[in-house]
Length: 439
Image (tube, rainbow, N blue to C red):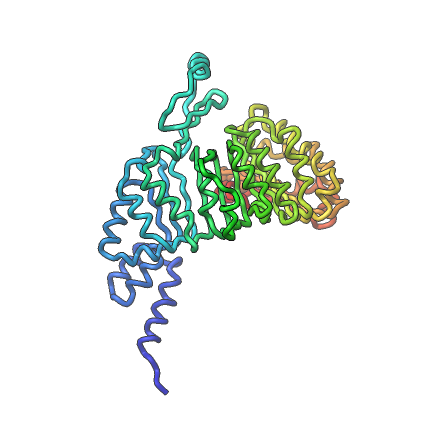
């Protein structure tokens, strides 16, 4: 029997290196330089996730591709970001060249335009409101006493726009996130293919000439998880949303982020999407990051009645941004949530209600929240429908995390019906990505 020793060696190397998550990146780099047989398996891991957040990083990766063009095919997760607000993407000539080489990307995130807020004096605010709109490289919005800055798509170089559109259209792409960008052309929706997840956060869209909605749906397109924070969308967006073949009708998981910018418009769009996806929507995540009212008074409660079979509802709130006392705001929001859930149509297929709270960081306030009067009506309502409830506090205070058992005990005592049916759980977790991820 002939045994291919080379295949055995290569298989052993691949199995060893594929456990790269257990090794520091420095060890993998050293391993790649040790032996040529280790080089490619190590490179597949080292170059799987690339973050381009500075011109220097673009330049370094560009030089690497000149030396070894095959590295571009190893990139599966790609993020273009600018955490320092240097706006380098507008001027970097190597970026579009680099983007065109990466054709196997599965997860792409464009978050180049981080919001930049600065406080205004009352006099400045009045001057700002009275100024005429002028063409500028950024879009400024007055929110309370702050200016929120967001870059416009139209001011990106044509080569960079085309390179981004090419990434959006990759057949390999499964997850796409675009954040903090305004005036995205509606042709964007004609580029995406079959995605597992699409995130559009703090964005606006603009109508374009020659728009043909039927041409967009000539090819199969879909996404099952949609995360939105759309501040503004015009007529052509509505044509896509309500088209008989609209991919919005296939959404099974909807994550809605409500912030201070475009709150009402975003809530309206979320309401429309809930109606369009009524037959497929199973999980709604409502992520409240606004200092204004928790729910718009009309649209969202009505929209929650649209889906046929909601299985999971997740509500996230950040009390640190509240204008009123945190425990008062918290109590009011839970009462508001209970009012929405009074509708039997919402509860008929629900299995889990998850409440996530950020902004309770003082131990002495723990009992104040756990003993709030809002819990009893919620307990009575959901116990009768056999809906499980999970309450999670997110904090960065270790002392509060250590109070996890106390939180469970006090809150469980105020939810006796759910507790008795083993349908209640509570915890205090570290405030990390779990709060913001929408899951």
